[in-house]
Structure formats: structure tokens, C-alpha cells
Length: 279
Image (tube, rainbow, N blue to C red; front, top):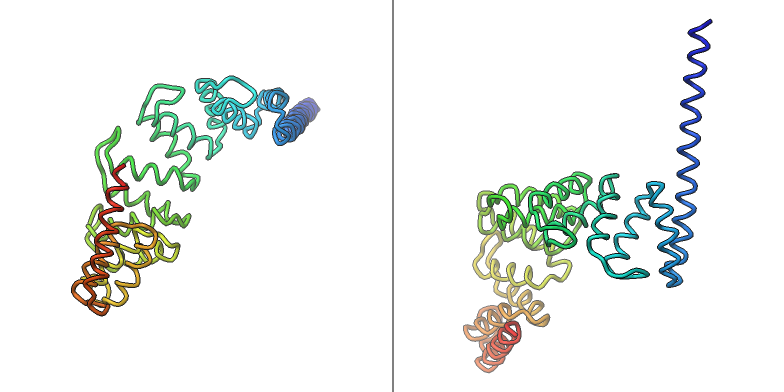
């Protein structure tokens, strides 16, 4: 009888806690929705009040909004330290985007002291939730050796994970690593595969890189006509390297009818573009 009564009391306590948690959650969501409505109207001061109430009830979204508003100075005086505090609260609750933002604040020393070790810690938390931006930044940190020893194998690992998100710059970077044999054995076919993915998205650096591989027959059958096509696409987007390569092909008559005048035009464009890039 005693044990039965004890189990009933325990069950009631559990149900009461669940009810209270659900009630707090409903209140937090209501405050957050009100804050978001005021934010959309541009009533930032009112929005801040609602977000703070929701944040006090552990709303990750509200904490994130507060971090952003303090970063931008919306409804409050711009305050990176306050922004850092709010992003930290949200990140500790498992928000992947907020974990990434916190990591970036550690990387840049914004609102806190610069600390690459802590940046890596928070990037890892977000990356393990498949947050592509953190996977990309981890790759760059390991590739450049910021706060850690350079490790191209780890860089390759994280670039590969980040590439699943379809970012053309990441795809191009993977192409570079396979072409040069950084973090892996040199593999021209893999390089071509990643360049082609980026080319399909119109990424000019990949167009140029793939064009060069066609001129050399690396990972593909040598094809100057295809190279000209790729260089032209990149050149029209202002890529100086592609413009120079077109000058070379028009000068030698490879893939196009030899045309010294056209060669001169592309050499000139390349020189002007390089000068512009240095400004």
C-alpha cells in the first residue's frame, strides 16, 4: 500500500513538472512570436522586451535574435559583448547556427578575446550537426594552421563534408586539393569531378581551372575547343587568368583560328583586370 501511494506521488510530481515545462514553453513561444511581429514592423525597442522575456524562458530563437540585435545596434546600442553573451546562451542549448556565430566571434575576437581553440570547439559542435558553414571554417582553420598545426587531411575531411551543401567555392577548393595532392594523393579525375560541379554553378575560378586541365589533358582527354569554351565563360566574368589563357590560345591557334589581334585584346583585358584586382 505504501509503495503504491509513493509511486502515485512520484507520478504526480513528474506530470506536474511536465505541465510546468510545457506552460513555460508556450509562454516563451508566445513572447517570441510577439517580439518577431514587432521586429518585422521595425519596432525594435518593443521587440527587445518581448525577446528578453522569451529568452528568460530559454527560447533559443529569442536569444539568437537578441545576439543579432546587439551586434547590429537595432533597438539598443551596438554592443558586441552583450551579443556574445546572448549567442553563448543559445549555443549552450544546442543551436547550430548560434554555435557557428559564437565560433566566428572567437575567431575574429569580436565581443571576446580572440581564441582559435575555443573557435574550433564551437565549430565542431555545429559541424557535428551538419552545419556546413562551420565545416567549411574548420577546413580553412586546419588548412591555414590558425591556432592549430596545419593538417591538410583534416582540411580535406571537413571540406568534403561541407561540399554536401552544394557550395561552389567549397567544390572548387576540393578540386584544387585533389589536383595538387594536398591532404590526399594527387587525383586528376577527382579534381575534374569537383571542378565540374562548381562549373555547373558558373564559378569562374573552376571554369578556368578545368579549362587548364583540358589544355594539359589531365583527368580528361586533351581538348582545346572545350578549354576555349571554359576560358571564355570565366573571362566574361572578369577572370584575369582565363583572359590571359584565351590570349595564349588565340596566339597559338589552339582550339580557335589563330588570331593575333584577338590574342592582343585578351592579353590587354587580362592586364587591366589584374591591375583592377590590386586596387
